[in-house]
Length: 270
Image: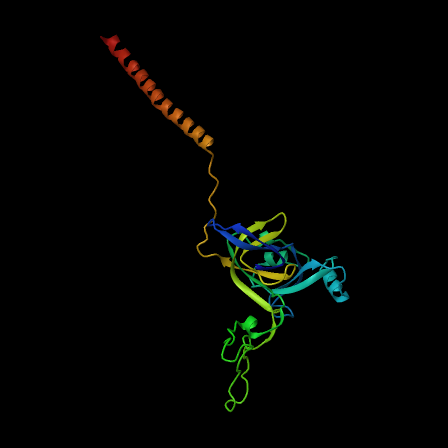
C-alpha cells in the first residue's frame, strides 16, 4: 500500500499532543493526490512505483498536459513526483491504484503515526563559516580585532600542500533537500485536508513537501474516551439501586407465597 503523499507547507501553530503537552506543530495542506502513472516490475519499467500529481498551475508545458490527459485528468498539474511501492501481490489493490485515482490523507495517515517529511530548505545565499557551520571565530585581542568571523587556516603548506575535499568553508547555504524523521502526527482535519505534524518541517511556506509514513510513535497513548456526565452516572446508578432494592422484595414475596401453598394441605389433613 502507498505510504507517501504530497502536500504544501502552511503556517506553524501550537497544539496539544496525546500526552497533554503543549507542542509546536506545522500545518501541511494535503489535497487529494492524483495517480498519474503506475509502474510495475513485470512491465518495461522493472520496478514497482507510483507517480503522483499534486497542485494546479495556470501555465503548464504541453508535455505535462499530455501526460495528465493520458491518465484521464483534465487539470493542469503542477508537480509530478514518483514514490516507490512495495509489491503486495494483491490484484484488487493494483486495480484500485490505477491512473486517475484520488488518494486522500486520511486513507494513509492517522493520529499517532511516525512520519518522515522531505522538502527543499530555505535558501540563504552565500554565507560565512560562522553562520554556515557554526565556527567560533578568532580572538578579539592580540592584533586580531578585525578577524572575529574569519575562517582561519584551511590546511598545512608542504604536507599535503593542498586543501582536502569537503573542507568546511564559506559558501552557498540552504536550498537543498532535507529530510526530518520520526515526526508525530498530532492532528488530522478530514474536511479541510490538513495534516498537523509535531515540530518543524523543512522548506518555505507554500513549498512542496513529501510526507512518508514510517509506523507508529513508540509509547503512543491514545486520548481517553469520553466519560458520561455526572447526571447520567447518577441516573444510571439510581436505576441500578432501585432495581437492586426491588429484587429482594420480589424474592421475599415469592418465598412467602410458596410457604402458604405448602401449609394449606397440612391443615386440611389435620
